[in-house]
Amino acid sequence: MAISFDRALGIHQHTVGIRTQRAEVLASNIANADTPQYKAQDIDFKQALANAQTRQGFAMASTNERHFNVNLPPTGELKYRVPNQPDTGDGNTVDMQVERNNYLQNALEHQASLTFLGSKFRGLTSAIKGE
Image (cartoon, rainbow, N blue to C red; front, side, top):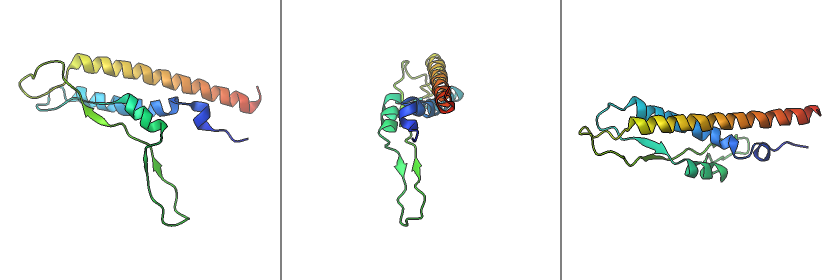
């Protein structure tokens, strides 16, 4: 009997990748807090997760039966964040408090997904060993 990782791991296999991408975007925002004209960006997590669940990724066409099937995971769409504060004069829209809070929340949710995946793998290991 084959193990279906999609069914066994559920939604959490997708959330880890999207949370990693979002952490990179938020870190970039923090790193560019003093860069003139820099516009804060973020990933629409719900949309990215919906794309991942429906597998709206990128696939390459194969012209020969011996070609490998290559499917790239869907990426989260980057969007510019609507700033909470008026223009600071240099065109930068990064609000450090918002970025830090979003980064911390994303890190906590990323860790929660990793913990959940770890428990799923422990359960699968126990089932395989017959424990």
